[in-house]
Amino acid sequence: MNRKKLLLSAVLCALGAAAWGPAMAQEAAFPSKPITLVIPFPPGGATDVLGRLIGKKMGDLLGQPVVIDNRAGAGTTVGASYAAKAAPDGYTLFMSSGTTFTVNPAVRPKLPYDPVKSFEPIGITGRTGLILLANKDVPASDVKQFVALVKAAPDKYSYGSFGAGTTSQFAGEMFFHAAGLKIQHVPYKGSAPAMTDLLGGQIPFTVDTVSAAIPQLKDGKIKAIAVTSAKRSTLLPKVPTLVESGYPGLEMDTWLAMVAPRGLPPAVKSRLELTLAQVVSDPATRDKMIAVGFEPAYASSKALAELIDKELPLMRAIAQRASITAD
Picture 1: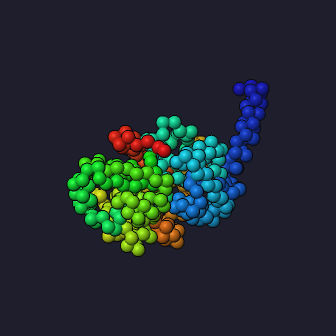
Picture 2 (picture 1 turned 60 degrees about the vertical axis):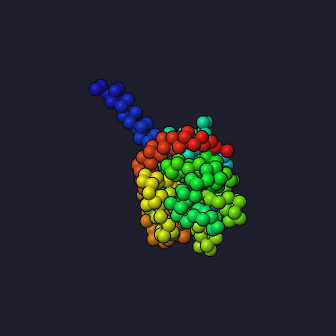
Picture 3 (picture 1 turned 120 degrees about the vertical axis):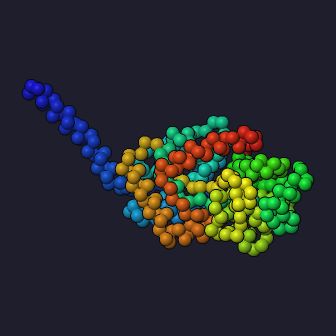
């Protein structure tokens, strides 16, 4: 190599170092400013409460505050779309339920984001089971009695969910199909109005989250028939699962996951994933999660990606079979 080529090579190396140096330094210094955690639900809800809890602990461990940005609307699509379009630098994170990643794609033909391509998985934070509930005066207290009651009077009974195209409707339809039941779906705009009508006897049954049902169950105002999760709820250890009640393979719960815009630098992703794992393993944080109805259940970014891949076709099949559509 002649002197001219050596000089050119040296210049190119210097330019490359100049270009990569700041980027590497910035990545190594992450985070150097506050991080925004987008929550696609209004303040005060279960996801918001959990997001604030996890965000506070993450901020403590990272040395920078994690600021909550509530962007509710359109079944989580408003917040998801905003987060998907943010810069993939680790300073915008997104926490949501399976609604964003597996339910919306099954019931909404056009989404402003792709559940797989738009996001970089960070990890699963917690899960809460769904539960089949009954008005206290309904003559059914377990799955066997419930099935017998509904089968004896086809089209007489109805059940409420916290919205059309939500996980509560999916869980209900999955079970009712397996049990061969005909039961009318009544969608509500949230858990609170559905619970009000269940308490008042306007509807005999609902499918809701364990966390939403706990207060009324403790007061004896409603009855728990079964949970749809793989295991019994820590908060309701006496309530059986559908699997235990004779329906193997019927498992569905609500899980919460943290993701970032696709294209996150590897070192930044690793730090966020490690920090999230530390947060969920913290004993004080775990106790607080359980207190608000969530089972601490950390899983890696790889496990989250695999869960989404597994649930997407399942949700699409349930939606097609039960003709489930979004509001």
